[in-house]
Length: 305
Ligand SMILES: [Zn+2]
Image (cartoon, rainbow, N blue to C red):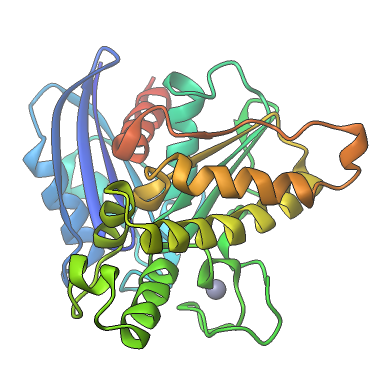
């Protein structure tokens, strides 16, 4: 069995070809201005061989399940795009299309850190804050769109979110939230250590996390601040879902302890009934940045069987 998995996030795209359970080829790039269907088709084309049996695609946004129509997303262009139907026509194999955090959760469930866990949450921290809910060993989708954890209202009247609402959790816990904090520090202190290290224009989240990794105290403080906001939201999710495990993926999630340490501390402080329960483990993804692509490929394999 050979399948291709494509993960189209808010800014980055990653793809893998999986043969008999092993990743044999990878591709990655940035999401451009092209139509989403064209983008997915060309990524699949890069990984294509005649042996491919099925293709799985994860998209950042609301995906109608099982039709595989991309309804809408705050970070990607296009609305009501029949991605599954178009790709099946183009490629001539069966295709599954799901939300990007759902396919990441599926990857962790099958071959990542969540193997053996029937109830867990996948949270992807990147351009936005995505969520995948696994309950009873399967993805919980509601009517189609469940798991938009980043758009729960966290701060009534807070900052404007990319989705058009105010105060969503992802406005304070995401890559762009970290960049905004860094910009504020640099504007206030243009001669400071952070400005000296990463410059004053076109700051990326990777710049800030690299500065934190290199031991810059200001950058570490900013990562910890985002981690604390992340942990506060996780506390609420634990009260709702009581998961056995929380898996953190996405570009910012890969930062690890500088972010997850403060997140665990704040989540533990806010734990509902905290004297009667333990904080579930909050772990970084077992599959790294390819979690979504691998999950999409595995979901396609199971769908195609
Ligand atoms: Zn929002």
